[in-house]
Amino acid sequence: MSFATKKSLFASMLASVLIAGYAGTASGMQAAEPGNPPVPPPSSAPAEGASYFSQHFSAEPLAAAVKNSVIQANLAAVPFNKIVLHTRDQVTTADGQPGQSEQNKPATYTVTVVLENAGHGLIRRMQVVQSQDANVVTRFDLTYRGYFPFLTQTIPANANALPPVVEARKVLRFDTNTDGHLSFVYLYGASGQATFADPGQVICDAGKQYGASELNPAIQGQARELSCQTVDSNGIVTDKMKLAYLEKYGVALVLHTQNPESSLDSTVTDFRVE
Image 1 (cartoon, rainbow, N blue to C red):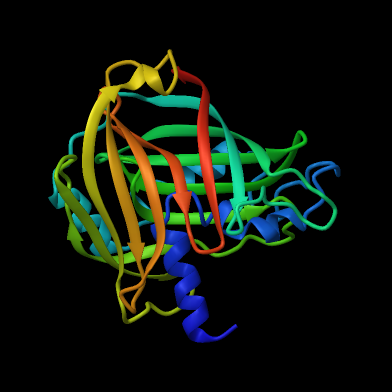
Image 2: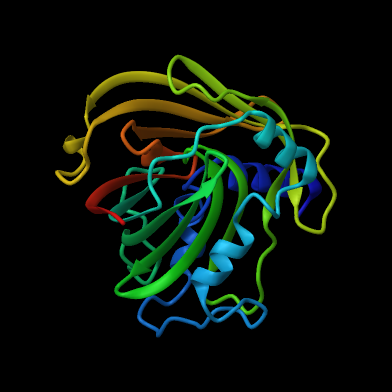
């Protein structure tokens, strides 16, 4: 893989909230065997996923410059400790047909999403994706309000070693408003590797408000539509996303993502605040 290709991939993984986790790599996901038993976590990861999640996706592991930017922003904490929800996600390939492999693997996935208050206005998110009741991929993120990423790690169920964490190294612009136009511009790299010279970007525009119960009856308050896109170092839009920012909880949920290869539509099937 060339340096330019790696940089584009890392930008997509970090900047896209969900699609790089599995929708943007649907063909690779489908290469796994959903009928097989879930593969245990890589030996280099703690056996307890929740412990790994809380330890490695908090403000403490952030690069010093990023941590300073977050703390100096004096961000309000989110008003919940933990949210657990489930979604049903449909992946469609660019030709408009459900994403299928030669073995006719399904294009519908069930996802367990755990959102936790990580302090400083940050939210850590764990997503466990299943197909036919077998784990396919687990994704860990540390984000601002669910739409600006600081740390991302995507672990296929059949991995025998932990992939690197893709991390923001320096924040160049960080809009913390949730209406109008907002953007996040950052320098980034994979853990243990050099920082790319060109920045990544997430650019969002707020749209209409509507009752959050339209997404699921258990969700209270209002939702605000966010239309976001990720831009690579060449100024090319790589991913487009539609999110719902839940004003009562201070977090955004991904409803639709699209890149040149595939798209994903997500439906919230249940929602529980703990």
